Image 1 (spheres, rainbow, N blue to C red):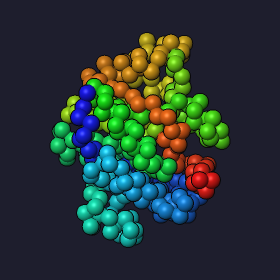
Image 2: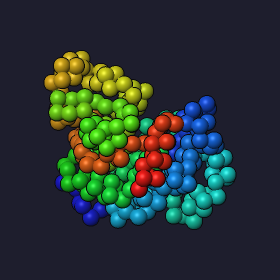
Image 3: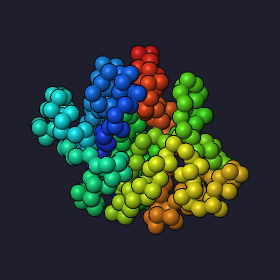
Length: 265
């Protein structure tokens, strides 16, 4: 079990996906992280949430590139004032994460999230961080039950990994709790291009795992155990009770849904 009094350093991945992103085109924005939600750019929403959480000490923004920062005075002010640290993004999300992780002290607990997590709030952050630190794991991922997400927001379409004990959606929340956890970023690299296809992700763990997955004999605990064995570190999960934790803004439909959710509130 980790020290629950130790504050996290939060890393926010804010790199773009490249040209001709339909979401950027639909929003009429220069950059994905700067797409407004409820009138506020997504990345500023995420950074404000992290600043309000007692679980978070330091905030590090990985991306956007300097050329975008020069055009965004509010974001630039956060960085030049020292309230938010900035790091140049790398070629891929996993490479960006590893680049920042390697610059931090080994004993620093890390919360990794993304700039498009527009519905992130302090309840989500505090719940995930506090429970991650009660585990004896090196790395912890936030997940939500697909049925909980669908019940709350039936119009959303989320990628789900269907296991014996339920279907789970990712929540773009990762805790790196030990020096050994840095190894998880390397593993992430191997599954990065497969993240939207659960079956392709499972193949990383071997064909016996694929067979158990297809037969719905693979539980969340067993899957985490096999991932732990594959990485050589202990991986765990926090099942989030907040359906909005599983909703990021990855498409024009997501953007419209998040706007509706905030409007209804």
